[in-house]
Amino acid sequence: MVQSMPDASPAKWHLAHTTWFFEEFVLAPFDPSHRWDDERWRVLFNSYYEGVGPQHTRSARGLLSRPSLAEVRAWRRSVDDRMAALLARADDAALAVTLLGTHHEEQHQELILADIKHALWSNPIHPPYTSDAPTDRASDAAASLPLVWTAFDEALVDIGADGAAFAFDNETPRHRGLVEGFSLASRPVTNAEYAAFIADGGYEKTGLWLSDGWAAVQAGRWRAPLYWDADDGSPRERRVFGLRGWRPIEPEAPVCHVSFFEADAYARWAEARLPTENEWEAAAQGRPVDGNFVESGRWSPAPAMGPGVAQLFGDVWEWTASAYLPYPRFRPLGGPLGEYNGKFMSGQMVLRGGSCFSPRDHLRATYRNFFAPGARWQMSGFRLARDI
Image (cartoon, rainbow, N blue to C red; front, side, top):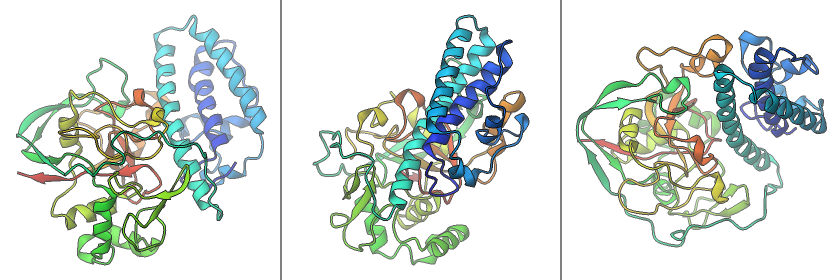
């Protein structure tokens, strides 16, 4: 039931909402025998779909002591059974919405971990989610790979999903975009590099910050990424809170839990910039979706491995310089499902690549994640780009 802030949701609510999604958008419209067990739950677990009715206040989801967890689990078992029966005879339309629902559920699997992390950190005794030892990669004890710049020539690039496999509507339609020549950093910015920005007074230099970013720094008293402790020592002397509780910061691992404002300020300090989403996608095209995902069991960013442009997938979501806007000729899905993405195309910034909380098969080069520029509780980092 715990809800540590308005942007987060209780784990029970995530389970109930994903169950509601399948019942609301698959069973109710495609199963002629469908009956709701409790119509009131349609309101409690509707997130933001105005087209299907009212919603319980988002910031008050932690007050939903009923239905109980046992009731929600029983509801999920019932929905799973009814979904299995329907899918045995489903038409293409029902199958398409079901596929969307599975990817929607993968999003919530990732959100659950981020929300649990914030809830446990908000608890004064900072309890860990697990005491199991992390699954470390072979390079974890090695020195950081040096940052190398890879040049990309100016090109007309096909951007967006081509329809060959599942994609969200915001990844369409595929279109051509001019990408001017640029250089991309071989890996995301590390904790050690970000600590140098802090040590140089990065959070005090107004000239590095966008106006809204500076206001956020002052209002939130930001002096380091979210979940770093208050010690002002070197990254090897500081700690970071994660699902395994407080642990020493890994200097060579990607910095995480920074806002777009912090990423943008760091890039300006480093005499670079953030890549646009078209540049990021151009660099990622044709590369395998390989990296540190939720299946690894590590649940924290790992140091870079391998030559070339590394860590494009997994570890940390990467902020881009691009506002979350519709592609040319974009058309949302019809009906209430059109609210899934399109209605949020204002005041958000695009992130790419996935994180160590993301399921591996949920990601692809065209995937567009988005959050408000001040968001920090997600597994968000960044890499640098330069003009050439």
